[in-house]
Length: 198
Image (cartoon, rainbow, N blue to C red; front, side, top):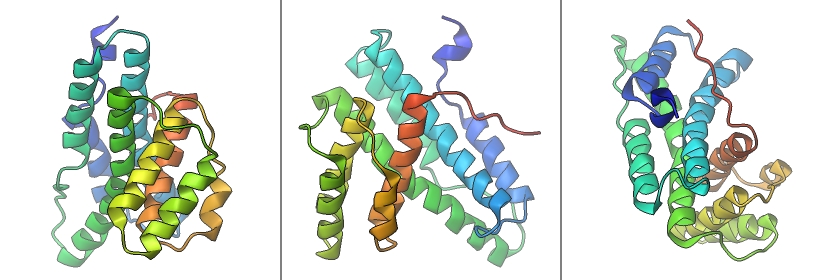
């Protein structure tokens, strides 16, 4: 195993993505802007997928895998340090990065849960999503997250979530978390590194 493979994610890699966020004129309605934010999210999800893969292959034990996940989570979920003078522009971009971070919260919890407790009980993933949406409607966000974490462990185990389920959801934390699970699902099936453009 090369040294590069052992480093699943670095502060520098995250900062490189943030530098692109700083430089580019972001509009979430614009396809290029949306792609940049999705790449930022996918790249972190790929790091999680690689840790899970190393865990599955026996290259990492439980403790090491959790430690690696913690390392990636600490980098990705820390307050973004954007070097932008205009406070309005900075606030807008911080809000966009925050959306990416919110989506990834469920990914990290699902990966940890999978390592600690294995995959959740087999059930159609749509049932977990419906339960999460119902919990969100009742303002029980802990339960909503719990259901989606369980769905995430099933995705890690190989189940596939049909992303059209999002079409019927109100925009909110549940839809953001499912967005993160979509990145995880893609990363588990094809953990190729998202290339950072110069």
